Amino acid sequence: MESNSTNSALQHTVHQGGRGQIVTMDSAYDVDASNYERDVVVNASYCGVLPARFIARHRPRSAIGVDCGIGPAGAGIAGLWYLEALNIPTAVADVMTVKLGDGDDLYFNGVVSLVNRPAHDCGVVPGMKVSDAALFLLEQDPGDPDAAEVTNRKVVGEGKQGRLIVCTDSIAFGLPEDANNVIVTAGHAGRSAVPYLLEVHPFGFICSDGGRGREDSGIAGMLEVNSSGLAGATVDARSAKMGDGLSTYYDGTISAANELARAAGVETGMPATEAAGILASR
Image (cartoon, rainbow, N blue to C red; front, side):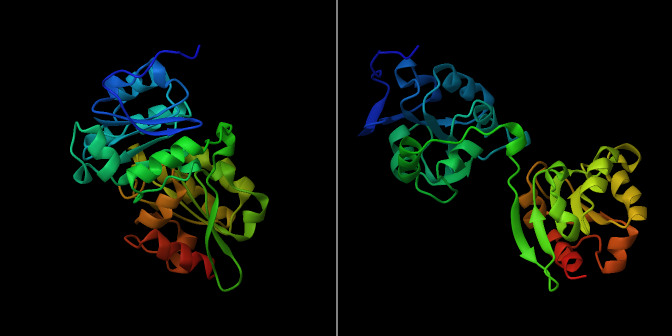
């Protein structure tokens, strides 16, 4: 049930609106039951899983924390995805733009570095001032899509013959019209990808190598579909985010290519953007 309690002395209201408040606090542990489904909690803690648990316990409208340099295994921002799973919009500020442990400073001086999907739904993007981001999070609502609907499909380029370069987060989200396209995805190219690749049957594709795996199992599917006429390549999993097709395209570095892709001009070490352009121009 929604709490009727008031904000504690540890919280500072910096904006009052019809939908709730923007409140600052020095620590994520200062989020309380009064924030339930109402407030944007701007807290000067790192956004790891532990602080996210304390935030999620009281389910505020949304949250903004600090990336704290991100750290090994992304531990400083892992709470972004923890809270995304609960559909709580969350952003973090670049630690070099704020004073740690000072919620007011985070609000007035912070600059957003990363956001989760619900926060992006609300209009928050990296580079935005925290004060502006907090207002977006207060005034806008995120979507609540089914898992199969979160595909992030985007056309990012077009070849000379009208062949599109399409980014999506998984080959499972390819469409029938992609039979003439180059599809850039973010899952591995192991054997489990083969049925999807053959069903969509794109002109060409780029996936992740998934870290290659034992016996190069992360690229086995890419090699297998060569005989079915699919020109394919993979990017080094260390160069791009798995599960993010746009990262495969913009950040990825080609780590392997099958015979058809190599014949088209795709080479190991090439940026994925260049490789996709080559395939789209065939």
